[in-house]
Image 1: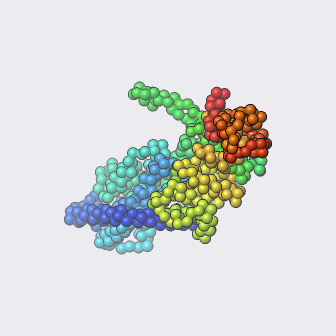
Image 2: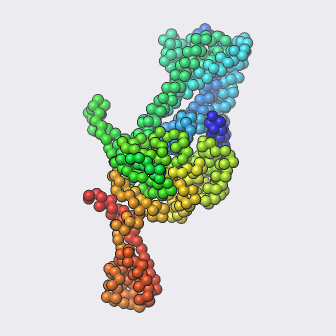
Image 3: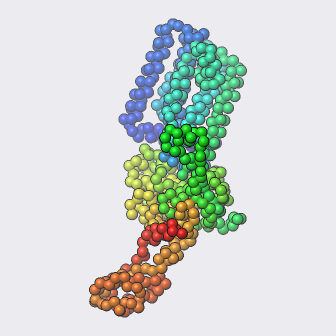
Length: 262
Length: 332
Protein backbone atom coordinates (compact mmCIF):
# COMPACT_ATOMS: atom_id res chain seq x y z
CA UNK A 1 0.00 0.00 0.00
CA UNK A 2 2.86 2.27 0.96
CA UNK A 3 4.34 1.70 -2.48
CA UNK A 4 1.11 2.93 -4.09
CA UNK A 5 1.12 6.14 -2.04
CA UNK A 6 4.74 6.82 -2.87
CA UNK A 7 3.98 6.16 -6.54
CA UNK A 8 1.08 8.64 -6.50
CA UNK A 9 3.27 11.26 -4.85
CA UNK A 10 5.92 10.84 -7.55
CA UNK A 11 3.33 10.70 -10.35
CA UNK A 12 1.87 14.00 -9.26
CA UNK A 13 5.12 15.77 -8.56
CA UNK A 14 6.38 14.83 -12.02
CA UNK A 15 3.01 15.93 -13.47
CA UNK A 16 3.48 19.28 -11.76
CA UNK A 17 7.04 19.52 -13.08
CA UNK A 18 5.86 18.67 -16.61
CA UNK A 19 3.29 21.44 -16.46
CA UNK A 20 5.86 23.94 -15.26
CA UNK A 21 8.24 22.91 -18.03
CA UNK A 22 6.35 25.12 -20.47
CA UNK A 23 6.06 28.39 -18.59
CA UNK A 24 3.91 30.20 -21.16
CA UNK A 25 1.55 27.25 -21.48
CA UNK A 26 1.19 27.12 -17.72
CA UNK A 27 0.30 30.82 -17.63
CA UNK A 28 -2.27 30.33 -20.35
CA UNK A 29 -3.72 27.39 -18.48
CA UNK A 30 -3.99 29.54 -15.35
CA UNK A 31 -5.75 32.23 -17.38
CA UNK A 32 -8.14 29.71 -18.91
CA UNK A 33 -8.92 28.41 -15.46
CA UNK A 34 -9.56 31.93 -14.25
CA UNK A 35 -11.97 32.37 -17.17
CA UNK A 36 -13.82 29.19 -16.24
CA UNK A 37 -14.07 30.37 -12.66
CA UNK A 38 -15.47 33.74 -13.68
CA UNK A 39 -17.99 31.94 -15.90
CA UNK A 40 -19.12 29.77 -13.01
CA UNK A 41 -19.45 32.77 -10.71
CA UNK A 42 -21.44 34.61 -13.38
CA UNK A 43 -23.88 31.72 -13.71
CA UNK A 44 -24.18 31.63 -9.95
CA UNK A 45 -24.98 35.34 -9.88
CA UNK A 46 -27.84 34.65 -12.31
CA UNK A 47 -29.23 32.32 -9.70
CA UNK A 48 -29.11 35.07 -7.13
CA UNK A 49 -30.93 37.63 -9.24
CA UNK A 50 -33.53 35.15 -10.47
CA UNK A 51 -35.46 34.85 -7.26
CA UNK A 52 -37.18 31.79 -8.66
CA UNK A 53 -37.36 28.39 -7.16
CA UNK A 54 -36.00 25.31 -8.88
CA UNK A 55 -38.15 22.33 -8.03
CA UNK A 56 -38.65 22.58 -4.31
CA UNK A 57 -35.20 24.06 -3.75
CA UNK A 58 -34.52 27.57 -2.53
CA UNK A 59 -31.68 29.41 -4.26
CA UNK A 60 -29.31 28.97 -1.41
CA UNK A 61 -29.79 25.25 -1.42
CA UNK A 62 -29.65 25.21 -5.23
CA UNK A 63 -26.38 27.07 -4.83
CA UNK A 64 -25.07 24.16 -2.78
CA UNK A 65 -25.68 21.97 -5.83
CA UNK A 66 -23.73 24.46 -7.96
CA UNK A 67 -20.92 24.18 -5.44
CA UNK A 68 -20.91 20.40 -5.63
CA UNK A 69 -20.97 20.63 -9.43
CA UNK A 70 -18.03 23.04 -9.45
CA UNK A 71 -16.12 20.76 -7.09
CA UNK A 72 -16.73 17.68 -9.26
CA UNK A 73 -15.90 19.63 -12.41
CA UNK A 74 -12.62 20.66 -10.81
CA UNK A 75 -11.87 17.10 -9.85
CA UNK A 76 -12.71 16.04 -13.40
CA UNK A 77 -10.29 18.59 -14.84
CA UNK A 78 -7.60 17.71 -12.32
CA UNK A 79 -7.74 13.95 -12.44
CA UNK A 80 -10.24 12.27 -14.75
CA UNK A 81 -9.68 14.15 -17.97
CA UNK A 82 -5.87 14.17 -18.02
CA UNK A 83 -5.70 10.46 -17.22
CA UNK A 84 -8.66 8.81 -18.85
CA UNK A 85 -8.44 10.62 -22.18
CA UNK A 86 -4.81 9.48 -22.31
CA UNK A 87 -5.70 5.77 -22.30
CA UNK A 88 -6.49 5.86 -26.01
CA UNK A 89 -2.95 7.14 -26.67
CA UNK A 90 -1.43 4.33 -24.63
CA UNK A 91 -3.34 1.91 -26.81
CA UNK A 92 -2.59 3.62 -30.09
CA UNK A 93 1.11 4.10 -29.46
CA UNK A 94 1.53 0.70 -27.87
CA UNK A 95 3.06 2.12 -24.70
CA UNK A 96 0.34 0.26 -22.79
CA UNK A 97 2.79 -2.64 -23.05
CA UNK A 98 5.13 -0.86 -20.65
CA UNK A 99 2.29 -0.24 -18.18
CA UNK A 100 1.18 -3.87 -18.30
CA UNK A 101 4.69 -5.08 -17.53
CA UNK A 102 4.97 -2.98 -14.36
CA UNK A 103 4.38 -4.87 -11.11
CA UNK A 104 1.57 -2.47 -10.21
CA UNK A 105 -2.15 -2.44 -10.92
CA UNK A 106 -2.60 -1.16 -14.46
CA UNK A 107 -5.96 0.46 -13.77
CA UNK A 108 -4.36 2.32 -10.87
CA UNK A 109 -1.48 3.49 -13.09
CA UNK A 110 -3.76 4.70 -15.88
CA UNK A 111 -6.16 6.43 -13.47
CA UNK A 112 -3.74 8.46 -11.37
CA UNK A 113 -0.65 8.94 -13.55
CA UNK A 114 -1.36 12.60 -14.11
CA UNK A 115 -2.75 15.44 -12.09
CA UNK A 116 -3.59 18.80 -13.57
CA UNK A 117 -3.08 21.51 -11.02
CA UNK A 118 -5.27 23.84 -13.04
CA UNK A 119 -8.24 21.98 -11.58
CA UNK A 120 -7.34 22.80 -7.97
CA UNK A 121 -8.82 26.32 -7.71
CA UNK A 122 -12.15 25.02 -8.99
CA UNK A 123 -12.07 22.30 -6.35
CA UNK A 124 -11.44 24.87 -3.62
CA UNK A 125 -14.04 27.28 -5.00
CA UNK A 126 -16.61 24.47 -5.21
CA UNK A 127 -16.13 23.48 -1.60
CA UNK A 128 -16.23 27.12 -0.47
CA UNK A 129 -19.54 27.64 -2.27
CA UNK A 130 -20.97 24.48 -0.73
CA UNK A 131 -20.18 25.58 2.81
CA UNK A 132 -21.02 29.22 2.31
CA UNK A 133 -24.42 28.45 0.73
CA UNK A 134 -25.19 25.79 3.30
CA UNK A 135 -24.56 28.29 6.11
CA UNK A 136 -26.65 30.88 4.23
CA UNK A 137 -29.58 28.51 4.09
CA UNK A 138 -29.38 28.09 7.86
CA UNK A 139 -27.77 24.67 8.12
CA UNK A 140 -25.83 23.74 11.18
CA UNK A 141 -23.09 21.21 10.56
CA UNK A 142 -22.60 18.18 12.68
CA UNK A 143 -19.97 15.48 12.58
CA UNK A 144 -22.69 13.22 11.24
CA UNK A 145 -23.81 15.51 8.39
CA UNK A 146 -20.21 16.20 7.37
CA UNK A 147 -19.38 12.49 7.24
CA UNK A 148 -22.50 11.76 5.22
CA UNK A 149 -21.52 14.63 2.89
CA UNK A 150 -18.02 13.22 2.38
CA UNK A 151 -19.38 9.72 1.80
CA UNK A 152 -22.00 10.88 -0.70
CA UNK A 153 -19.43 13.05 -2.49
CA UNK A 154 -17.19 10.00 -2.80
CA UNK A 155 -20.14 7.99 -4.11
CA UNK A 156 -20.69 10.64 -6.79
CA UNK A 157 -17.03 10.71 -7.75
CA UNK A 158 -16.68 6.93 -7.88
CA UNK A 159 -19.72 6.67 -10.16
CA UNK A 160 -18.42 9.40 -12.48
CA UNK A 161 -14.98 7.83 -12.54
CA UNK A 162 -16.27 4.33 -13.23
CA UNK A 163 -18.53 5.37 -16.10
CA UNK A 164 -15.73 7.42 -17.64
CA UNK A 165 -13.21 4.65 -17.19
CA UNK A 166 -15.58 2.15 -18.83
CA UNK A 167 -15.84 4.33 -21.90
CA UNK A 168 -12.10 4.98 -21.97
CA UNK A 169 -11.37 1.27 -21.63
CA UNK A 170 -13.44 0.56 -24.71
CA UNK A 171 -10.69 2.31 -26.70
CA UNK A 172 -8.91 -1.03 -26.61
CA UNK A 173 -11.35 -2.16 -29.28
CA UNK A 174 -12.09 1.09 -31.04
CA UNK A 175 -8.61 2.58 -30.65
CA UNK A 176 -9.64 6.04 -31.79
CA UNK A 177 -12.73 6.45 -29.61
CA UNK A 178 -15.41 8.90 -30.48
CA UNK A 179 -15.37 11.84 -28.19
CA UNK A 180 -17.35 10.06 -25.53
CA UNK A 181 -15.89 12.20 -22.81
CA UNK A 182 -17.91 15.17 -24.03
CA UNK A 183 -21.08 13.15 -23.46
CA UNK A 184 -19.97 12.59 -19.91
CA UNK A 185 -19.30 16.24 -19.32
CA UNK A 186 -22.81 16.99 -20.59
CA UNK A 187 -24.09 14.39 -18.16
CA UNK A 188 -22.24 16.06 -15.33
CA UNK A 189 -23.59 19.42 -16.50
CA UNK A 190 -27.11 18.02 -16.19
CA UNK A 191 -26.31 17.73 -12.51
CA UNK A 192 -25.89 21.48 -12.13
CA UNK A 193 -29.56 21.68 -11.25
CA UNK A 194 -31.52 19.92 -8.53
CA UNK A 195 -32.84 16.61 -9.68
CA UNK A 196 -36.37 17.63 -8.70
CA UNK A 197 -36.16 20.41 -11.28
CA UNK A 198 -36.51 17.76 -13.99
CA UNK A 199 -39.70 15.97 -15.15
CA UNK A 200 -40.53 12.74 -13.33
CA UNK A 201 -39.26 10.43 -16.06
CA UNK A 202 -35.90 12.18 -16.27
CA UNK A 203 -35.75 12.15 -12.49
CA UNK A 204 -36.08 8.38 -12.53
CA UNK A 205 -33.49 8.00 -15.30
CA UNK A 206 -31.05 10.35 -13.59
CA UNK A 207 -31.32 8.42 -10.35
CA UNK A 208 -31.08 4.84 -11.48
CA UNK A 209 -30.01 4.60 -15.12
CA UNK A 210 -27.56 7.46 -15.42
CA UNK A 211 -26.98 8.25 -11.80
CA UNK A 212 -26.64 12.01 -12.19
CA UNK A 213 -28.56 12.57 -8.98
CA UNK A 214 -25.80 10.83 -7.07
CA UNK A 215 -23.22 13.16 -8.48
CA UNK A 216 -24.61 16.47 -7.26
CA UNK A 217 -28.12 16.48 -5.79
CA UNK A 218 -27.56 13.85 -3.13
CA UNK A 219 -24.27 15.27 -1.78
CA UNK A 220 -25.99 18.65 -1.58
CA UNK A 221 -28.89 17.11 0.32
CA UNK A 222 -26.37 15.46 2.59
CA UNK A 223 -24.71 18.69 3.66
CA UNK A 224 -28.14 20.25 4.13
CA UNK A 225 -29.04 17.35 6.40
CA UNK A 226 -31.88 16.19 4.16
CA UNK A 227 -30.46 13.02 2.66
CA UNK A 228 -32.45 9.91 3.49
CA UNK A 229 -30.43 7.04 4.84
CA UNK A 230 -31.75 4.53 2.30
CA UNK A 231 -30.55 6.76 -0.54
CA UNK A 232 -27.07 6.79 0.99
CA UNK A 233 -27.21 3.04 1.30
CA UNK A 234 -28.34 2.69 -2.32
CA UNK A 235 -25.51 5.02 -3.34
CA UNK A 236 -22.89 2.93 -1.59
CA UNK A 237 -24.16 -0.22 -3.29
CA UNK A 238 -24.55 1.42 -6.69
CA UNK A 239 -21.09 3.03 -6.66
CA UNK A 240 -19.47 -0.21 -5.49
CA UNK A 241 -21.19 -2.04 -8.32
CA UNK A 242 -20.05 0.55 -10.83
CA UNK A 243 -16.49 0.37 -9.54
CA UNK A 244 -16.39 -3.42 -9.47
CA UNK A 245 -17.83 -3.49 -12.96
CA UNK A 246 -15.16 -1.06 -14.21
CA UNK A 247 -12.43 -3.35 -12.85
CA UNK A 248 -14.07 -6.40 -14.30
CA UNK A 249 -14.48 -4.68 -17.63
CA UNK A 250 -10.83 -3.57 -17.64
CA UNK A 251 -9.65 -7.13 -17.02
CA UNK A 252 -11.90 -8.29 -19.82
CA UNK A 253 -10.63 -5.56 -22.17
CA UNK A 254 -7.03 -6.46 -21.34
CA UNK A 255 -7.67 -10.07 -22.16
CA UNK A 256 -8.77 -8.91 -25.57
CA UNK A 257 -5.78 -6.56 -25.88
CA UNK A 258 -3.25 -9.18 -24.93
CA UNK A 259 -4.67 -11.76 -27.24
CA UNK A 260 -4.92 -9.42 -30.20
CA UNK A 261 -2.09 -6.91 -30.05
CA UNK A 262 1.06 -7.36 -31.99
CA UNK B 1 8.28 -31.82 -21.34
CA UNK B 2 9.44 -31.30 -17.73
CA UNK B 3 11.30 -28.13 -17.05
CA UNK B 4 14.92 -28.93 -16.45
CA UNK B 5 16.25 -26.62 -13.71
CA UNK B 6 19.07 -25.58 -16.01
CA UNK B 7 16.56 -24.10 -18.46
CA UNK B 8 15.41 -20.61 -17.70
CA UNK B 9 13.02 -20.32 -20.59
CA UNK B 10 11.07 -23.17 -22.01
CA UNK B 11 8.96 -22.75 -25.12
CA UNK B 12 7.12 -25.85 -26.22
CA UNK B 13 5.04 -26.22 -29.37
CA UNK B 14 3.99 -22.60 -29.09
CA UNK B 15 1.52 -21.21 -31.59
CA UNK B 16 -0.37 -17.97 -31.95
CA UNK B 17 -3.23 -17.42 -34.35
CA UNK B 18 -4.91 -14.12 -34.93
CA UNK B 19 -8.59 -14.33 -35.72
CA UNK B 20 -9.33 -12.21 -38.71
CA UNK B 21 -12.66 -11.47 -40.32
CA UNK B 22 -12.76 -11.06 -44.04
CA UNK B 23 -15.00 -8.37 -45.44
CA UNK B 24 -15.95 -8.10 -49.08
CA UNK B 25 -15.97 -4.56 -50.43
CA UNK B 26 -19.18 -2.62 -50.89
CA UNK B 27 -22.47 -2.32 -49.07
CA UNK B 28 -23.51 -5.89 -49.74
CA UNK B 29 -20.23 -7.04 -48.30
CA UNK B 30 -20.82 -4.90 -45.24
CA UNK B 31 -24.24 -6.45 -44.63
CA UNK B 32 -22.87 -9.90 -45.07
CA UNK B 33 -20.00 -9.05 -42.78
CA UNK B 34 -22.46 -7.94 -40.13
CA UNK B 35 -24.86 -10.88 -40.23
CA UNK B 36 -22.74 -13.76 -41.33
CA UNK B 37 -19.18 -13.07 -40.33
CA UNK B 38 -16.61 -15.42 -41.78
CA UNK B 39 -13.55 -15.55 -39.60
CA UNK B 40 -10.40 -17.50 -40.12
CA UNK B 41 -7.19 -17.87 -38.21
CA UNK B 42 -4.00 -16.31 -39.48
CA UNK B 43 -0.99 -18.01 -37.98
CA UNK B 44 1.62 -15.60 -36.59
CA UNK B 45 3.73 -18.21 -34.83
CA UNK B 46 3.44 -21.93 -35.50
CA UNK B 47 4.65 -24.79 -33.36
CA UNK B 48 7.87 -23.29 -32.04
CA UNK B 49 9.92 -25.06 -29.37
CA UNK B 50 13.24 -24.12 -27.79
CA UNK B 51 14.99 -23.81 -24.45
CA UNK B 52 17.21 -21.06 -23.16
CA UNK B 53 19.64 -21.40 -20.28
CA UNK B 54 20.34 -18.66 -17.73
CA UNK B 55 22.93 -16.15 -18.88
CA UNK B 56 22.55 -16.81 -22.59
CA UNK B 57 22.34 -14.06 -25.17
CA UNK B 58 20.03 -15.17 -27.94
CA UNK B 59 19.27 -13.25 -31.09
CA UNK B 60 16.01 -13.63 -32.96
CA UNK B 61 16.33 -13.25 -36.70
CA UNK B 62 13.66 -13.00 -39.28
CA UNK B 63 12.16 -10.78 -41.91
CA UNK B 64 9.50 -8.20 -41.05
CA UNK B 65 6.30 -9.93 -40.01
CA UNK B 66 8.07 -13.25 -39.45
CA UNK B 67 6.66 -13.47 -35.91
CA UNK B 68 9.69 -12.35 -33.90
CA UNK B 69 7.83 -9.68 -31.95
CA UNK B 70 4.82 -11.92 -31.34
CA UNK B 71 7.15 -14.55 -29.96
CA UNK B 72 8.95 -12.03 -27.75
CA UNK B 73 5.66 -10.64 -26.46
CA UNK B 74 4.39 -14.11 -25.63
CA UNK B 75 7.53 -14.71 -23.58
CA UNK B 76 7.05 -11.51 -21.59
CA UNK B 77 3.35 -12.07 -21.10
CA UNK B 78 1.82 -9.40 -23.31
CA UNK B 79 0.22 -11.84 -25.71
CA UNK B 80 -1.64 -14.99 -24.77
CA UNK B 81 -0.50 -18.04 -26.71
CA UNK B 82 -3.18 -19.82 -28.72
CA UNK B 83 -1.72 -23.22 -28.02
CA UNK B 84 1.48 -24.53 -26.52
CA UNK B 85 3.49 -23.67 -23.46
CA UNK B 86 5.76 -20.84 -22.36
CA UNK B 87 7.60 -21.00 -19.09
CA UNK B 88 9.96 -18.26 -17.96
CA UNK B 89 11.79 -18.92 -14.72
CA UNK B 90 8.98 -21.14 -13.51
CA UNK B 91 6.32 -18.54 -14.25
CA UNK B 92 3.56 -18.57 -16.79
CA UNK B 93 4.14 -15.16 -18.39
CA UNK B 94 0.57 -14.36 -19.42
CA UNK B 95 -0.53 -14.30 -15.78
CA UNK B 96 1.82 -11.35 -15.25
CA UNK B 97 2.37 -12.01 -11.55
CA UNK B 98 4.29 -9.27 -9.76
CA UNK B 99 7.10 -11.68 -8.87
CA UNK B 100 7.52 -12.47 -12.57
CA UNK B 101 7.35 -8.85 -13.72
CA UNK B 102 10.09 -7.90 -11.25
CA UNK B 103 12.40 -10.40 -12.93
CA UNK B 104 11.94 -9.25 -16.51
CA UNK B 105 12.13 -6.11 -18.56
CA UNK B 106 11.17 -5.09 -22.05
CA UNK B 107 12.85 -2.46 -24.19
CA UNK B 108 11.20 -1.53 -27.46
CA UNK B 109 13.30 0.53 -29.80
CA UNK B 110 10.37 2.34 -31.35
CA UNK B 111 8.37 3.00 -28.18
CA UNK B 112 9.46 5.03 -25.22
CA UNK B 113 8.44 5.06 -21.61
CA UNK B 114 10.35 8.11 -20.35
CA UNK B 115 8.30 11.24 -19.75
CA UNK B 116 8.95 13.40 -22.80
CA UNK B 117 9.01 16.81 -21.11
CA UNK B 118 11.09 15.91 -18.08
CA UNK B 119 14.68 14.81 -17.53
CA UNK B 120 15.11 11.01 -17.43
CA UNK B 121 15.94 11.27 -13.72
CA UNK B 122 12.29 12.06 -12.86
CA UNK B 123 11.01 9.04 -14.76
CA UNK B 124 13.68 6.91 -13.13
CA UNK B 125 12.48 7.74 -9.63
CA UNK B 126 8.87 7.05 -10.64
CA UNK B 127 9.94 3.63 -11.91
CA UNK B 128 11.92 3.04 -8.73
CA UNK B 129 8.79 3.72 -6.66
CA UNK B 130 6.69 1.43 -8.85
CA UNK B 131 9.20 -1.38 -8.29
CA UNK B 132 9.31 -0.61 -4.58
CA UNK B 133 12.96 0.48 -4.48
CA UNK B 134 13.98 2.88 -1.72
CA UNK B 135 15.43 6.24 -2.75
CA UNK B 136 18.85 5.09 -1.60
CA UNK B 137 18.69 1.82 -3.57
CA UNK B 138 17.50 3.74 -6.61
CA UNK B 139 20.35 6.24 -6.34
CA UNK B 140 23.01 3.56 -6.07
CA UNK B 141 21.50 1.65 -8.95
CA UNK B 142 21.18 4.72 -11.18
CA UNK B 143 24.80 5.71 -10.53
CA UNK B 144 26.03 2.23 -11.30
CA UNK B 145 24.10 1.96 -14.56
CA UNK B 146 24.81 5.54 -15.60
CA UNK B 147 28.50 4.73 -15.23
CA UNK B 148 28.22 1.68 -17.44
CA UNK B 149 26.14 3.54 -20.01
CA UNK B 150 28.34 6.64 -19.92
CA UNK B 151 25.42 8.84 -19.02
CA UNK B 152 26.03 11.93 -16.93
CA UNK B 153 24.30 15.26 -17.03
CA UNK B 154 22.05 13.95 -19.82
CA UNK B 155 19.97 12.44 -17.03
CA UNK B 156 19.00 15.87 -15.80
CA UNK B 157 18.17 17.32 -19.21
CA UNK B 158 14.60 17.08 -20.61
CA UNK B 159 14.18 13.92 -22.69
CA UNK B 160 12.98 15.92 -25.69
CA UNK B 161 16.36 17.66 -25.83
CA UNK B 162 18.39 14.45 -25.89
CA UNK B 163 19.78 12.84 -29.01
CA UNK B 164 18.30 9.52 -30.07
CA UNK B 165 21.35 7.67 -28.76
CA UNK B 166 21.25 9.38 -25.37
CA UNK B 167 17.52 8.76 -25.18
CA UNK B 168 17.90 5.08 -25.96
CA UNK B 169 20.58 4.70 -23.31
CA UNK B 170 18.29 6.43 -20.81
CA UNK B 171 15.45 4.11 -21.82
CA UNK B 172 17.70 1.13 -21.19
CA UNK B 173 18.67 2.56 -17.80
CA UNK B 174 14.99 2.96 -16.91
CA UNK B 175 14.30 -0.60 -17.99
CA UNK B 176 17.13 -2.06 -15.91
CA UNK B 177 16.54 -0.17 -12.67
CA UNK B 178 14.92 -3.11 -10.91
CA UNK B 179 17.75 -5.55 -11.68
CA UNK B 180 15.79 -7.82 -13.99
CA UNK B 181 17.37 -11.17 -14.75
CA UNK B 182 15.72 -11.58 -18.15
CA UNK B 183 15.94 -8.81 -20.75
CA UNK B 184 13.65 -8.74 -23.76
CA UNK B 185 14.94 -6.27 -26.30
CA UNK B 186 12.91 -5.55 -29.41
CA UNK B 187 15.06 -3.63 -31.89
CA UNK B 188 17.02 -1.80 -29.18
CA UNK B 189 19.32 -0.07 -31.65
CA UNK B 190 16.70 1.00 -34.16
CA UNK B 191 17.62 4.25 -35.84
CA UNK B 192 20.89 4.75 -33.94
CA UNK B 193 24.08 5.70 -35.72
CA UNK B 194 26.94 3.23 -35.89
CA UNK B 195 28.76 4.59 -32.84
CA UNK B 196 25.66 4.67 -30.67
CA UNK B 197 24.81 1.13 -31.79
CA UNK B 198 28.26 -0.04 -30.82
CA UNK B 199 27.97 1.56 -27.38
CA UNK B 200 24.59 -0.06 -26.70
CA UNK B 201 26.03 -3.36 -27.84
CA UNK B 202 29.10 -3.19 -25.64
CA UNK B 203 26.92 -2.19 -22.71
CA UNK B 204 24.65 -5.19 -23.19
CA UNK B 205 27.54 -7.57 -23.41
CA UNK B 206 29.15 -6.08 -20.29
CA UNK B 207 25.82 -6.19 -18.43
CA UNK B 208 25.46 -9.84 -19.35
CA UNK B 209 28.96 -10.61 -18.10
CA UNK B 210 28.57 -8.68 -14.86
CA UNK B 211 25.11 -9.77 -13.83
CA UNK B 212 24.64 -13.05 -15.65
CA UNK B 213 21.35 -11.75 -16.98
CA UNK B 214 19.74 -13.57 -19.89
CA UNK B 215 19.24 -11.40 -22.95
CA UNK B 216 16.85 -12.06 -25.80
CA UNK B 217 16.97 -9.60 -28.63
CA UNK B 218 15.63 -8.98 -32.07
CA UNK B 219 17.39 -6.63 -34.41
CA UNK B 220 17.42 -5.60 -37.99
CA UNK B 221 21.09 -4.85 -37.74
CA UNK B 222 23.13 -7.94 -38.40
CA UNK B 223 26.04 -6.30 -36.59
CA UNK B 224 24.06 -6.43 -33.32
CA UNK B 225 23.52 -10.13 -33.73
CA UNK B 226 27.06 -10.98 -34.80
CA UNK B 227 28.58 -8.91 -32.00
CA UNK B 228 26.31 -10.09 -29.20
CA UNK B 229 24.63 -13.38 -29.87
CA UNK B 230 26.56 -16.64 -29.91
CA UNK B 231 23.19 -18.31 -30.47
CA UNK B 232 20.54 -17.31 -32.95
CA UNK B 233 17.00 -18.45 -33.54
CA UNK B 234 15.72 -17.79 -37.03
CA UNK B 235 12.02 -17.46 -37.55
CA UNK B 236 10.57 -17.65 -41.01
CA UNK B 237 6.85 -17.21 -41.64
CA UNK B 238 6.10 -18.02 -38.02
CA UNK B 239 8.10 -21.24 -37.99
CA UNK B 240 11.37 -22.08 -36.34
CA UNK B 241 13.90 -22.20 -39.12
CA UNK B 242 17.22 -22.48 -37.39
CA UNK B 243 18.33 -22.70 -33.77
CA UNK B 244 22.01 -22.88 -33.05
CA UNK B 245 25.20 -20.93 -32.96
CA UNK B 246 25.76 -18.17 -35.40
CA UNK B 247 29.14 -19.47 -36.60
CA UNK B 248 27.82 -22.82 -37.75
CA UNK B 249 24.90 -21.08 -39.40
CA UNK B 250 27.35 -18.93 -41.32
CA UNK B 251 29.57 -21.96 -41.93
CA UNK B 252 26.80 -24.06 -43.33
CA UNK B 253 25.65 -21.22 -45.51
CA UNK B 254 29.04 -20.19 -46.69
CA UNK B 255 31.90 -22.53 -45.88
CA UNK B 256 34.55 -20.23 -47.35
CA UNK B 257 36.03 -16.88 -46.59
CA UNK B 258 37.55 -14.30 -48.85
CA UNK B 259 41.27 -13.60 -48.60
CA UNK B 260 42.49 -10.51 -50.39
CA UNK B 261 46.22 -10.09 -50.80
CA UNK B 262 48.27 -7.19 -52.07
CA UNK B 263 51.75 -8.29 -53.18
CA UNK B 264 54.97 -6.38 -53.60
CA UNK B 265 55.64 -7.91 -57.01
CA UNK B 266 53.27 -9.00 -59.70
CA UNK B 267 52.63 -12.71 -60.02
CA UNK B 268 50.79 -15.31 -62.05
CA UNK B 269 47.73 -17.41 -61.27
CA UNK B 270 49.45 -20.81 -61.16
CA UNK B 271 51.41 -19.66 -58.10
CA UNK B 272 48.18 -19.41 -56.13
CA UNK B 273 46.19 -22.39 -57.32
CA UNK B 274 47.30 -24.58 -54.43
CA UNK B 275 45.99 -22.13 -51.80
CA UNK B 276 42.39 -21.84 -52.85
CA UNK B 277 39.93 -20.92 -55.52
CA UNK B 278 41.06 -17.79 -57.31
CA UNK B 279 38.30 -15.25 -57.52
CA UNK B 280 40.26 -12.46 -59.04
CA UNK B 281 43.86 -11.82 -60.03
CA UNK B 282 45.02 -8.49 -61.24
CA UNK B 283 48.75 -7.72 -61.41
CA UNK B 284 49.67 -7.44 -57.69
CA UNK B 285 46.17 -8.03 -56.29
CA UNK B 286 44.80 -11.52 -55.63
CA UNK B 287 41.48 -12.54 -54.22
CA UNK B 288 41.11 -16.11 -53.01
CA UNK B 289 38.20 -18.13 -51.69
CA UNK B 290 39.52 -20.31 -48.87
CA UNK B 291 37.52 -22.83 -46.86
CA UNK B 292 37.26 -21.96 -43.18
CA UNK B 293 39.10 -24.99 -41.81
CA UNK B 294 42.18 -24.32 -43.96
CA UNK B 295 42.19 -20.60 -43.41
CA UNK B 296 44.95 -20.28 -40.78
CA UNK B 297 47.31 -22.59 -42.64
CA UNK B 298 46.74 -20.85 -45.94
CA UNK B 299 47.31 -17.41 -44.45
CA UNK B 300 50.53 -18.40 -42.69
CA UNK B 301 51.80 -20.10 -45.85
CA UNK B 302 50.97 -17.05 -47.92
CA UNK B 303 52.85 -14.84 -45.48
CA UNK B 304 55.99 -17.01 -45.63
CA UNK B 305 55.89 -17.68 -49.39
CA UNK B 306 55.30 -14.13 -50.65
CA UNK B 307 56.26 -10.54 -50.02
CA UNK B 308 52.90 -9.27 -48.86
CA UNK B 309 52.05 -5.59 -48.37
CA UNK B 310 48.48 -6.06 -47.22
CA UNK B 311 46.22 -8.98 -46.37
CA UNK B 312 42.53 -8.87 -45.67
CA UNK B 313 40.18 -11.65 -44.64
CA UNK B 314 36.49 -11.02 -44.86
CA UNK B 315 33.26 -12.88 -44.34
CA UNK B 316 30.65 -12.77 -46.99
CA UNK B 317 28.19 -10.32 -45.34
CA UNK B 318 25.97 -12.29 -42.97
CA UNK B 319 22.79 -10.43 -43.82
CA UNK B 320 23.17 -11.57 -47.41
CA UNK B 321 23.63 -15.10 -46.13
CA UNK B 322 20.50 -14.86 -44.01
CA UNK B 323 18.64 -13.45 -46.97
CA UNK B 324 19.80 -16.46 -48.95
CA UNK B 325 18.62 -18.70 -46.15
CA UNK B 326 15.14 -17.25 -46.22
CA UNK B 327 14.91 -17.54 -49.96
CA UNK B 328 16.00 -21.15 -49.66
CA UNK B 329 13.29 -21.67 -47.03
CA UNK B 330 10.80 -20.26 -49.46
CA UNK B 331 11.77 -22.92 -51.96
CA UNK B 332 11.55 -25.78 -49.47
